[in-house]
Picture (cartoon, rainbow, N blue to C red):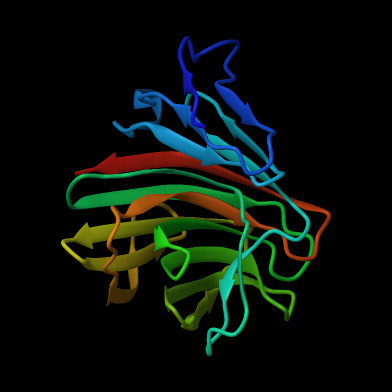
Length: 214
C-alpha cells in the first residue's frame, strides 16, 4: 500500500527506498520542478531523492526489457515516476557509473508492462557508452543511436497528445532529435527515471538538472 510521506526535507535526504516491490509516494517535489507526487518502486534496489537530484542504485538482475518477438521480457528495474495530466517537456542530466555491459539509466514512459518506452544511456556490449531507445508495444523495438565519450548526457522527452519525441544533448543547451513515436495506453501514462543492472552487482545513476514544463 502506498504511504504518504510528509515533512520530507530532512538533512537534505528526502527518501531512501529499500523495500522490495513496495510503492512509496513522495508528495509534491517542487524543488525538483515536478508538480506531481513521485511514486517510487525500488524493486530490491535503493532510490534516494534529495533537493535537486534523484539517485538510483540498481541491484544485479534488474531490467526493463522485451525482445523483438515478445517471447522474453523483464520488468523489475527500480524506478521513480509521476503521472502528468497534459502535454509536457521533461529533461534531465544522466550521470552513470558504468561497470558492465547493459548498465544504464533512462528517462521512461510507461503505460503498462506491455506498453512502454525507455530512452537509455547505457554501456553497450562493445564497451562503448551510448544512447539507445526501446519502444515496446507488446514486442520490443530497440534502436541504437550514437556513442557518448563521457559518462554523462542530457536526455529529453516531449509529449503532444499521444506522440512522444526524444532528444539528447551533450551540454544541456544544443539538442538533437532522435525519434518520434506514438504510445497509447488504457491507463494514464507515467513518466520518470529508471535504472538497470542486468549483469553488474549494482549500478549507480544520478539524475540532475531536472526540468519539467507542461
